[in-house]
Length: 114
Length: 112
Image (cartoon, rainbow over all chains, first blue to last red; front, side):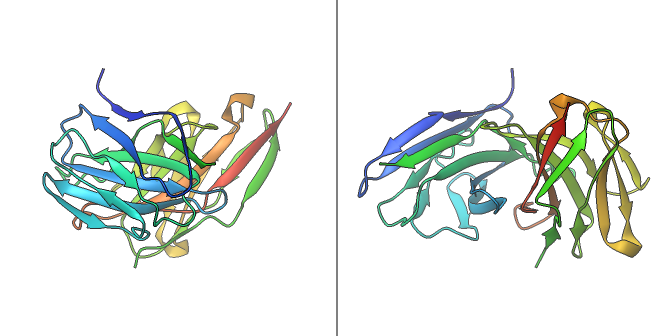
């Protein structure tokens, strides 16, 4: 089945540690995105990538880093510089072809700082 | 900048009643409604790019694009208990990575 897989589903981090969230897609989509979701704030864009080895900051990139070494993969690292990392993180992808802006989402990773 | 507003944070309806969730957008032609069950990802309900302003989606939902009111409200004639979830309106445009901007969401509660 084609889709987007995020892992792990739940992640606990101690303060001061970096953690990496995984996102893999087998939809052959060009673009991939990371969103952060907090109660009452909707989804906010952290980073996005339109092509391998290239990515751009979104609205709330501070304290996060990404890489896009393969088309299928777009891991997100939450660094110790992120002051309030506890949130629900969603990865998405988009084909970028035919003017289609529909995004497909993974099931999310809930990160909790302990 | 793109903008999208969902004025209602919470809505409660009785099962079997009709539903309308409001969404107001800025200057963008591409509109979406997504639904999210607790702890899950987002599922696309419907989308509007151009053409017929009344759009049919999955699970019996529809939405109407009204340019004069800058609205794209989501409707369902008869709500089922399983429709309880959070609903997000989103706007997008081609180019610049085809990013989507989301509203803050409307939490729907269905009373039996």
